[in-house]
Image (cartoon, rainbow, N blue to C red):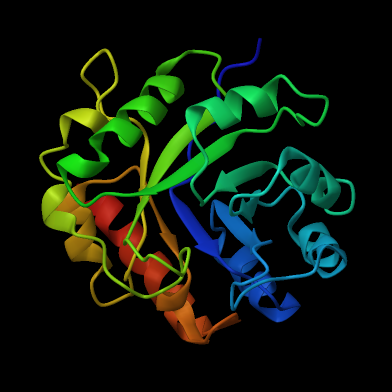
Length: 237
């Protein structure tokens, strides 16, 4: 069996326009996100997403964002729009994933699981998913920590509580004591991403609102500034 793919270092999420994707390709980001959550301000219809997906095929990881979707609903989107990975951004459980993997709808794609972290109250959920990701042949390639919002699922611009993330909570650690691959999201923008990287030391970042002029409309200057900040930080380590 092939080795597990790595979690992306730079992921820009919530694309709705071709010109924004062209900029992301030029910047050589590691992954782009297409949002299939109908209540999101960045939602794209599967047929529109298909066209967007085709533009970045082979350039970077194409991640589909789903919130509490059924396996049938995910399969329906995949029948229209090719994706390279799935991001689960709802209340999906480890048991839900097992049922999905054992169903006829399972596409065999890598999984990113997004969770909030507010402290010990969220430890059981993190422990369950991190244990899943630690298995050699697990489909879960990484975790994403986002700011908590009881209504909106990502892209809120709210800042995650970075102070809770380093040192890593025990629930983030795999059996060997190493942190699960961790993408940091929530309130990141070009002005604070270096601080976030220094404090949290994540595997990568996931950004939507921090590189936009309005929801779903990316700002090319902000995108470029974000990429430069991350890469300059990498070089300085």
